[in-house]
Image (cartoon, rainbow, N blue to C red):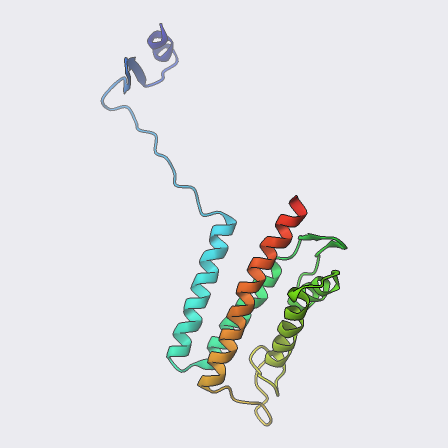
Amino acid sequence: MINEILGKHGIGYVIKPPRLEPREETAPVVSVVTPPPSLAERAVEILEESLARSEQLLVQHRGREAVQESLWLLERVATAFRGVETATGTVEGKYFNQIVRELRDIDLRGALKRVLDWISGLHGYLSFPTGGGVRHGLDLNEGIKIDDNEARLLCNLIRSYLSFLLVEHQRLARSRRV
C-alpha cells in the first residue's frame, strides 16, 4: 500500500523490507550539502589564521607587521563583547575604545577591569605615531622603530590579552544566561 502511494506521487523509492530502495536504477540521489561553518567556527578560523600570520611575520623579522596583525585581532575580539548584557546594561559600542570603556564601567572587582586598563594603554601606545606607531603609522621624525625583541614581547602581550578576553567573554555571556 505504501509503495502504491509512493508511486502515485512520483516518489522514486520503493520499500523492500527491511530496505528503502530506488524505484529505478537511474533515480537521482539527493545530495546532502555540507553546512557552511557557523559564525563561531568562522571566528575561530579567523583567530587561528591571524595568529599564525603574526607568528610567520615574526619569524621573517617583520615585527611591525606582526604587531599590526595581532593588534587587529585584539580589536576584532573586542567587538565580540558587543551585545553582551551586564549588570549595568548591554555593551553597545561599535569600536574598540567604546567597547573597552563600556566594559570598564561595569562594576568589576576582578582582574578584567585591570586588564582592560592595560589593554587600553597598550592600544594607545601602539596607535600613537610617536609611540609604537603601528595602528596610525609611524612619525618619521620622532617615531620609535620596533625591533624583533619588542615585537615578540608586544605580540605575546596581545596574545595573553586575547586568551583572557575570550574566557571573560564566555564567562560574561554565560552568567547573563543563568
